Length: 298
Image (cartoon, rainbow, N blue to C red; front, top):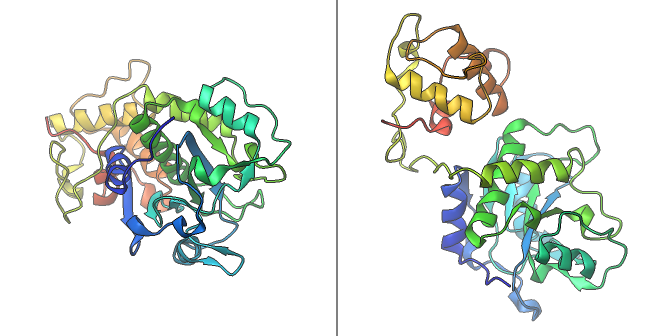
């Protein structure tokens, strides 16, 4: 059993996992407490897709809900750029009724979930919920930046509660007839969460514009990254790229301090991982991708 995190702790956990988080209106007090049903104890994190396109309209829908189902419809919305928009704290209308045996397996953190065949338990009481912007038709793509944010968000709450990756499930694994999230495997996502939980979290940048988070290297400017430039910042950048599984440094995976083609190709992988393409993924660091990589200052 776990007491739900306070709003401040949810925000801190997400930013502490390296996520860019947007606070939507009065999300900290926006919940379904008026329904008379409880929030907690919480046991896990549930992932959904929105069946919508567009960030602003999806966030508005999840905050407000609709005539048949009042908002909030989740706790956070994860957009295709990998940003998290917090829309509620407390009870949210996202999970509906699902299979008690699945909940028991999540509580016990079993390696395999039973099939969800009955709807006999209120999931809104027991799960945090993230809606991810996607049409859910099997064709709408899932950018790597969005998948990475799902991984980070789930890991953040698991880390805060001391849960393992087995506490992360999809709506389709909980409620009979549901298919979300469609387009990636929840078992693969749990694998990603497990790998992230095995390493220390990487904090998000300082919200102050233009300032890196304390302890992280400031963006040195595009012109810094030229052939022959030598700097320990480049070596530390390379080590971060290796940690993010974006490296072209050969079998030793030991990037040196001199800017070269291996650095450029590795950084291009990082840009593509965040969802950039074409000329925006040329391997030359820009401020946005640099700040999200969080290169140590020393």
